[in-house]
Image 1 (cartoon, helix red, strand yellow):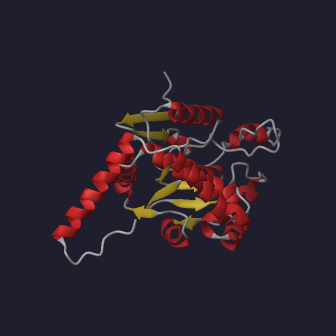
Image 2 (cartoon, rainbow, N blue to C red):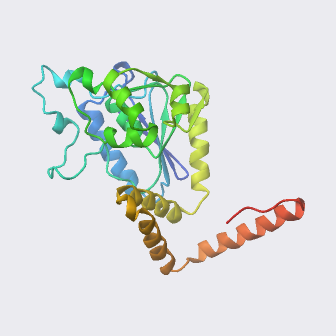
Image 3 (tube, rainbow, N blue to C red):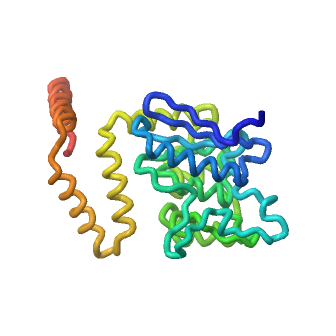
Length: 272
């Protein structure tokens, strides 16, 4: 039996998804692309899962599309990247989950693999992580949102440089540029990513989903409408009325704040 190209481990609300073609540096062949899209859809529908961590089997995160499938150029790249039938619909490596996806970048993330990382909500990088956009080197254009997501992360001029040169960006520079949230020792990568996931799981799941949906809606709105979009979504959330568990969480937070201030009379309190 051949080993699965994608491994999934579930543990108390957390799912760790590992791309598992290490000999091919986790290059995205048809089997892996299909398995990843299906797994993400299944996890989106699984109410027992609140956070997903995406990583690769060492030594790479993902080397991008499997160039062997491109052959001499006759392959349909749009089909390989999962293009929607409607040309006005954006392509993505997976459909939106409505719950956080944390990228744990353990090695190189190149081209399509770079796009996988960019489609995560935030990133933790190993000290061994390196990023590169080599689309222009192989004559394939990005189709999973790179020209939108990379400028959002590092700024337009830096994004243009990375895409025009194909040069690699090391983990520390990626941190300085705002591409990744944290850089950790290689052996601490998954523990660090799962610790962040546990922090997320400690919050109200519906609240997390709503605030992520608000970020998405604001990003898609015209600049002049972004504040109004947030206000509209906040109002709709408030009008639905708090659930009993939300009321309990608020009371617990107030009590915890009171205990903190009692133990430290000089504390100014936490802004609400």
